[in-house]
Length: 110
Image 1 (tube, rainbow, N blue to C red):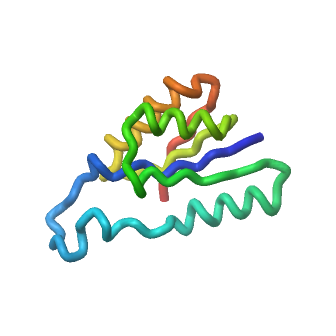
Image 2 (image 1 turned 120 degrees about the vertical axis):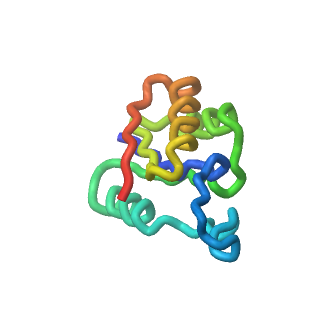
């Protein structure tokens, strides 16, 4: 089985009342240890194949995200979700449904 783990873009992120010095767009561009750990576990300890796509880096539009998802031809798409990025998660789901309709979609977070 091919698993694709996606980090949604941050274009519709909820930016709470935190000072801009620690809450600007560039301050959140660090790798997700949980996503990397899960990918490593799947690849090293199972017969399945996992890859990561991080849409935070260039914040593509919905069609571009969909094409990138479809290029991987995943059986399952896992999307990182938290309350503050829900609108972005909805965009990734829409992209996957349009460009990779047979892919199962799983949404979750920490």
